[in-house]
Image 1 (cartoon, rainbow, N blue to C red):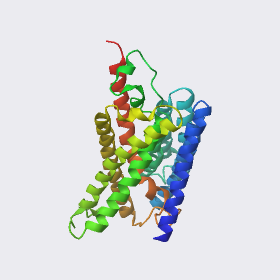
Image 2: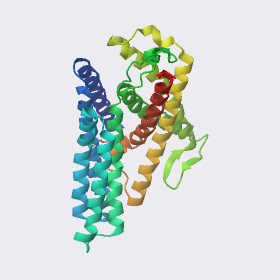
Image 3: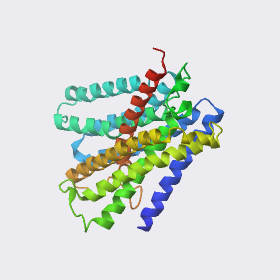
Image 4: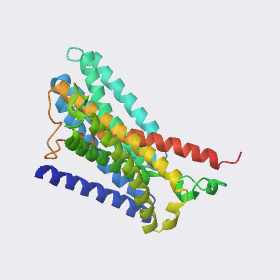
Length: 328
C-alpha cells in the first residue's frame, strides 16, 4: 500500500506539473505549452506500446514489434505538430495509421513464412491500443478557443462559460478518470459485503456493481469540482471574473455533470478492456514501472477511454455553440 501511495503521488505530481507548465507557457507564447504536454502523451504511448507488445509475446513477430514501435514513436509527434501548425492533426493521424496498416499487411508478402493473420491482428491491436487512441488525447490537448462571433456573447451563460478548450478538456480527463477510480475502489471495499454482486465476474472478478455505481458518483462529483476549479483558474490568470461562475450555474453544472458521468462510464469500460486483455494473456499487471499500480497502461487504461468520451462531448458542445452563435 505504501508503494502504491508513493507512486500515485509521483504520478499526480507529474500531471500537475505538466498541466501547470501548459497553462503558464501558453500565457506567454502561442500555445507552445500544448506541445510540452504532448511530450507526456508521447511517453505514455512509447511505454504503453512496450508493455502491450511484451504482453503479446510470441503473438507478434520481431518485425511487427519494430513496426509497431515506429508507429508509436512517430504518430504522436506527427499528430501534435500537424494540429499545432496547420490544424490537420486528425488527417495526419489517419494517414499514418493507414500507412502503418499497409506496411503490416505487406509482411504477408515479404515475410510470408512467419506472418499470419492472427499476429497481424495482434499488431494492429497493439497499434490502436494505446497509440492511436492516445492521438485523441493529443487532439484534445489542442482544442482551440472559438473566435468571438457576433452573437456568441448571447450564448447561454456568456462567452467565458462557452469556451470548451484544451485546458478544460485536459482538466476533465485527468480529474474525472482518477477520481472515478478512487470512488469505485472506496465503494467496492466498504460496501461489497452488503452489495456483493459482481460487475463482470468472468473479466474482472474483483469489480462489483456497487463499485461501478461509486465510480459514476465520483464522475458526477468530479464534474462539479472541475466547474469550480476551472473558473478559479481562469480568474487567477486574469481571464475572467470569479462572479461569472454563478451565471446560469444550474444549466452549466448539468452539462459538466453529464460529461463527468459519461467519462466515468468510459473509464469503467476502459478498465474492463484492459482486464480482459490481461486475463487472456495470463497477466496480473501490464508492467512494473509504477509500484503498487503496475505499468503505465494499468494507470491510464480508463483515462484513454475517458479521453474518447470527453473529446466527443467537446466536439458536440462546440458544434452547438457555433450553431447558436452564427447569424441565421
